[in-house]
Image (cartoon, rainbow, N blue to C red; front, side):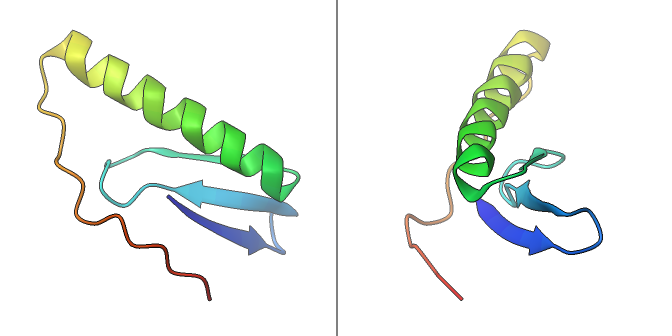
Length: 65
């Protein structure tokens, strides 16, 4: 999960590079983390329902910039 602040959107933008199209946002960092977890869960549930494969995570590394 990648979280970045967007001045343009005035929100924290969340993307999940390993899950195509999985993204959300939050007005606070904490909300963005919570929304990100919900988005990942929903993405996986939808993929299972549609019979699509779930990608294997590329790493468990935490990178903070």
